[in-house]
Image 1 (cartoon, rainbow, N blue to C red):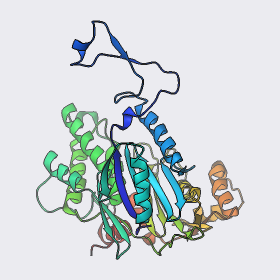
Image 2: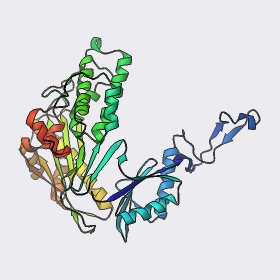
Image 3: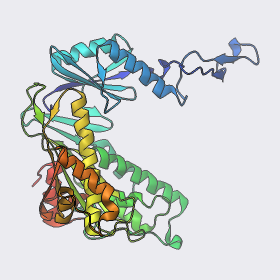
Image 4: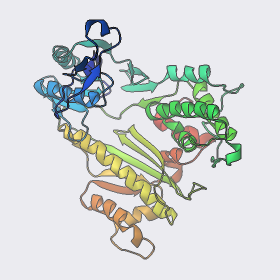
Length: 423
């Protein structure tokens, strides 16, 4: 799919297309500048949605659904903003992001689909995709790859934050360290906290779309939005400095193999999970790190504090493995919702033999009885031939990058899985 042609269009005045379909009757005051044309006390009754209404976005989305349906596109049952059609030019896919609509497939089919959409809405034709949701999109057709970077966001780090002088660090956070809750007397004032929140918000956007290797560092920073200390600000600046010092790095999508457009082709979904047991010193909760791959290309990464306290390393690993399995199932359902196939069983790699063994047997022991629902979920997936868990050495588990602040060769090794090899 990395060889697909893609174009982007922006629907003009998108929120003005919506209609009230639940019996709403809304009124508004005469807009400023129009008062002279109406007697005093007049108001307007809205016949369509306008910008500023809370229902405007979903009302436009409903109109978009009607438009793509008339174009003979079906909506994915797994992703409500994904629409597809098997045409004589192969599979053509629409993806909507509010009023931005991306269409991808073979070029001839894409151009036909674009003409169909522009006939229904007044659109600005952005052209072939080289930027999307704030990301620069670099296509390499020879290597069959796509790389996402965010140079504008990197420049905002330099312009808006007082980053430290000197060379950029080699890692986004100090290896082996973990942030802790600040003592109330050490918290920064409100105006500086606002700046901290703004910076972490930018990093959250960057980690999601283009820099997966900063997931763990940013996860830690985001936990202190209500009370940060100078140590947290210093850690945020380090992460920003790391990103600014490596602008060429970005999420690299380079799938293995080539799809010829045949619907009988089997896509390969794999996953890797890891956990760091009782890492949170305040709550004693563990951290999960997971990765989901489509034909060897990373399509989803996760770093999050688990929602409950686990009683052993094995249980923490089982929680992380279950989260990864859920992500794999979603990817499978998205692909299958378009009439494509996924190779079964999907392989889930775990670096804890106890957790792997629990997914492969039906015995219930005293120390694992309390997590039987989670165990049975993975066991049932194995019995149904959907997901098969297997052991992987810890040093080969790239999801380790999302549970702790790594350093040295191990960081570089795992970084290459998501951002390519930069030597």
